[in-house]
Amino acid sequence: MTTSKSVTQPTGNREIHASGQLTRWRTIDLLTCAFLGVAFGVAYWAWGLAYEAPSSAVSAGFPPLGALFAWPWLVAGIVGMLVIRRPGAAIFTEVLAAIVSMLIGTQWGMTTLVSGIVQGLGVELGFAAFGYATFRWGPLLLGGFLGGALEAVYEWYSYWQEWSMGYKWAYLFLLGGSVAIFGSLLAVALTRGLAAAGALNAFPPGQEARERHAV
Image (cartoon, rainbow, N blue to C red):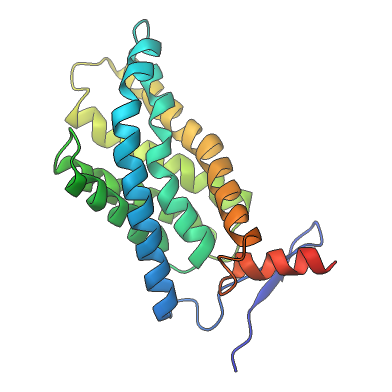
């Protein structure tokens, strides 16, 4: 029987990693990523209906401020990685969420899929930079920022061609920063909530929740 790997952090808390070889996916991993992707896809579609009014309001005086309402579209990839803890989890979950929202119907059409790929890749790179060896704030913040930054660059050439470079760089840092902070906080809260409810017992967050309660 394969046991879970663990790493001791400076705080003394154990961080439980995915059981088995890191690159080996189980059926339950695939099914859970699919479930998360579908759930977030519906949420992304709903956010696409709700975000335009507040985004337009805050960006009236300074257009890049619209980035502050775009960060929710990257949460799926972060949650997928926090739950599954295997290479590819962020891209898998984010792309599937994009496909689902696109199929339901968004104003961005096929470009939604491109955004899902770009966003998931950025989040993935943040965790890859740490060798998929830790799933705490370092890779969370880096992955969130890179996901937002890559999406911003894609949007430079898709939507904001007429902007000055000052606007473009401001948008990049606002989007990357908001994903890193707000997206990471929401992803951690959702993951911990699911783990506390017993929905992630087969995954490292569920094991960590049980160990916290046992202390």
